[in-house]
Length: 250
Image: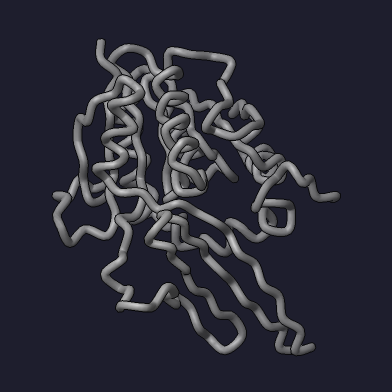
C-alpha cells in the first residue's frame, strides 16, 4: 500500500503496527472504564471521536449501542478501523480534528483520548479544537479530554530530555522546550540482524489543565468535572494524567 503524505505521522507503516505497539491500552482494565465513562455521558445520544485512529475506543463504545462518528487525519489508520469487525459501520470523516466537521451534528459527547490533544502543536490549534468540539455538541453535551499532566519535575536544571525506554534494541526519550511548551517523543530502533538503525520523532505541545480550562471558556464551554482517570479517582497535585469534562450550556 502506498503511503499517503496526508497521513501525517501515522502512515501505513505506523498504522500496521499501532495496535500491537499500544497493546496495553487495549487491556480490559484500561479500556473498559473509559468506555463505561463515555457511554454514561452519551446516554441515548451519539458520540464523535476526534482522532479515532484504529477504533480502540470507538468499537467497544459502538458495541454498547452508542452511535459513533470519527474524525481522523490518517487514511491508513481509518482503513485499519474499517477492516475490523464492526468498523465498516462507523463513519469516519478524513481531516484534522481542529477544524474538520462531521456531517452530523448535535452530539451528546465529543471525546479526545490518550494525549491526542498534544498532537496539535500550537496553542492556536488547540483552541480551535475546543471550538470545533463545541460546534459539534448539542446544548448540554460534553467534551472529554484524556491527557497527561506535564511531568516537568523529572527535568533537573539544564536537562531537556527524559528517557522512557531502553531495552538493548530500542531507545525512546521525550524532549522538552519549557519556553514554548514544545516537546517531542523520539524513537531509535536497531535491527539486531543487520545492525541498521532507524530514528523517528513525533512533535507535540504539552498543555496544562488550567490552560485547557481557558481554552474551553473561549469556546463557550464550562468545566463540569475533572478526575485523575476514567475510574473517577480524585485529581490531585500528584496526578500524572487527567480526564476532564467540559459542558456546553443548555
